[in-house]
Structure formats: structure tokens, C-alpha cells
Image (cartoon, rainbow, N blue to C red):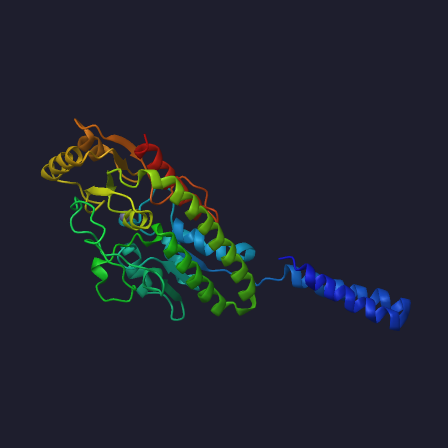
Length: 335
Ligand SMILES: [Zn+2]
């Protein structure tokens, strides 16, 4: 990071000295001053051995780490955390990790047995359980009734005991992402106090980027807030709540299992009854069931991706993910 005020300080200090000490000292002092300053500018202790489970969290962690290192991502591309399996090389990375950042035991079930074998001292940070991260209850069934804003799911502080009932898709609420950035900054700073101010500056940049995008998305989605739609699996509850949208059901309860014929028929009935305008499929899963539900209804099929599989990784990933979901929804739900 550039700190022009420090350059000025050093130069002023040197200029003062130079008057007193003449020309020969001038060169020496300047050399020392610039050596000191250039080391201050570039010095950042490397942040290594950081493992993150899913791309949205990876984006937040990488945003805080900045240029100090590269976090390793486990669930890549079009893989889904719901049915993921670790590769042997990833188990080896976990053994070497100083930090493992993940959502929690409701999402990364593939990680749980590996976590238990990690050396003592490995920091395992379940972000869903951290202060400031809101948790919503899993909605009952998938074809949940209506969309009464007061009836389903209440914000909790994430420290409650009912792990089973927590909806793990916490990253789709930008307020949660901001809270997670703060947790990540705190955790990494504990391990690398020499990078504290750098992490903090990076975190502030990430947060302001999220806040800016959030405002744009609110404006984009405001006209379609009341337009009903169906999702493939119940991944978007946090997004719907934050932007006050009207989802009326999901095609499957568990994305790794199929849906019964009875359920699909009930859902198609629902689509007709409430006049659902869109059925959103997800690229991680076959669209066969979405096509079946849409048949004979006026609902349009469109794709949204809660994981951002096609997006480039890194600090910019997260705000782009929010934007992509919002644009996908708005363009299908809008007239
Ligand atoms: Zn999911």
C-alpha cells in the first residue's frame, strides 16, 4: 500500500537533517531513508496454508488476504457442496492448513471427518456460527406455503443449538458476507499481526464494494419484488429475505435426491395457482425436474446459480455473484 504521508515525513525529516550535516551525509541519509521506506511499502508477511470450502467464501477470504497469498479452494467449478467428495490431494492440503474456513456442518458434510483428523492448532472457522452472521431456519418442506414475511424463519444469532434446522446458504445475504469479512479479518490478524493494518484496509475495500453492489441490486429488484417464482432447491432464502422477494416453493427439498411424482404434480398446481412467472433451475443439477414442473404452465425457465460456478475466482467474485443472481432474476421476472 502506498502511504504518501509517510514519504513526506521521511523527506521532511531528511531535509531537516541535511541542513545540519552537509552534503556527504545527505547521500547516506537519503539512501537509508529510501531503503527503509521501500521496505515499508512492500513488506507484507505471506499468508499461506489457508483452505476455504466454497467459492463465495473463498472470495471473501481472498479479498482480505489481498496480495499476501492465495487461498486454496476445495469445491471448484460446477461441483456442489451438497454431494462433494474430497480428493486425496485436498486431504493433504487440509493436513497442512493453518486455517480452514467453511460454512458449517449443515453444508460441508464432506469435510467433517477430515476436520477431526487435523493437527492440533489448525484453526477451523465455521462462519455460520460467528457473531453477526444471521442464521435462518430451514423452511419446512420445499413447497412452502405462500410468502408471509412474518410466518417463516426468524433471524437468530447463530449460536443456538439447533444445528439441524439452520439453512446453510448464509452467504446469499450481503449483510452476512460483511459480517464474515470482519470475522476473517480478525482471525487472520490473530495469526499474522504484522499484516493487521493491511488486512483491515483490504476488508474495508471489500465491504464498500459489497455495499455499493447491494444498493444497485435493491434498485434492480425493487420492481419485481411481488412477482412469484419457484426455485430448484431452497438455496435463496437469505437472498429473498434481504431483497424482499416472493419465492413460492422449491422443486426439491434435498438437491441430492429426486422429487416424487406427487410432489412435482403439487408444485405444478402451485405454479398455476399463484401464477408463478419463473422457475429457476441451477447449473449444478439436471434441469429435467424443472422442465417437468414448467410443462403446461405459463412459467418461464431461467437459470440462476447460488455458487457462481462460471465466475472468475478472487476478491471480485462475491459482489459479481450477487449481481449475476439479481440480473438473472430481474430479467426473467420483469416484463
Ligand atoms: Zn444448497
